[in-house]
Length: 244
Ligand SMILES: Cc1cc2nc3c(=O)[nH]c(=O)nc-3n(C[C@H](O)[C@H](O)[C@H](O)COP(=O)(O)OP(=O)(O)OC[C@H]3O[C@@H](n4cnc5c(N)ncnc54)[C@H](O)[C@@H]3O)c2cc1C
Ligand SMILES: NC(=O)c1ccc[n+]([C@@H]2O[C@H](COP(=O)([O-])OP(=O)(O)OC[C@H]3O[C@@H](n4cnc5c(N)ncnc54)[C@H](OP(=O)(O)O)[C@@H]3O)[C@@H](O)[C@H]2O)c1
Image (cartoon, rainbow, N blue to C red; front, side, top):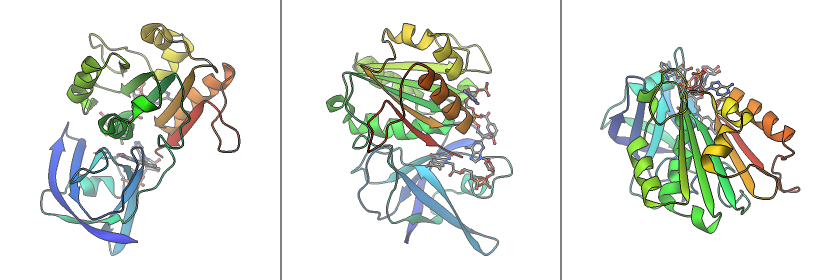
């Protein structure tokens, strides 16, 4: 079921990456979940999934979107401005939530691009700390200008020694950031070393979100370390959400 939504604000991070703030009356949701957003395009309703970035209870919904070249919906979303209408699913969906992720000592959140959004929602909601002792957010982007929410994340990390923030910028060298893909950082042990936390079956749960190749290749590396995918009927150490 769809409800009417209205864009009340937008924030541009670069010429392809933006956040939309949307007023819409949807059912309560959990951090990590996504809504569907739709526009009429050539006489058809075109709807796609977007993770919520806001914490539950906030007055407006917030999504972080990258305009995909040749995409059907995302370039149309990029053309919206305050006052424009769109359709929003009446309920959020998805299982990448702290209800589904088991309690653990070290929670690793690995995101590429816009997939940082659901982790920002979890951090804003502040519920992580009943779930784990340490949280590591690894945020991988192509260029420094793709680092949405970076000031807020730096502030959160500086206020909370249990949160470690690791940035990977793959297509330019940036001081304080890694210059390799998340997969390479795991394969070489650099992430564990930088976090001061080993990735193992005793202490770790890893949530992988975003680019489907990153998710598949990282999952393979973790399986080789003896970790397992988390299933309801068989608890494990890996939770995944592929964005395409
Ligand atoms: C659970 C879930 C949550 C999602 N959350 C977000 C989010 O928070 N922000 C966001 O921007 N997107 C998110 N997506 C992706 C989003 O749903 C759309 O797929 C994306 O916006 C492209 O839609 P489109 O209609 O413009 O392109 P389409 O016309 O549907 O696709 C064109 C092609 O682009 C590729 N593609 C799709 N998405 C991407 C991408 N992000 N980067 C590179 N290639 C891509 C696909 O291979 C596809 O064949 C999410 C997807 C899922 C499944
Ligand atoms: N970001 C931009 O400047 C930009 C500009 C215009 C349009 N877009 C559109 O946005 C879409 C998404 O771009 P995005 O930059 O948000 O996401 P992305 O292409 O998924 O890149 C985000 C990060 O994921 C890394 N990555 C890609 N494949 C990986 C793998 N197999 N294993 C580990 N890491 C991997 C990238 O490294 P690498 O750099 O090594 O690939 C990059 O650091 C593009 O397809 C394009 O349509 C993006």
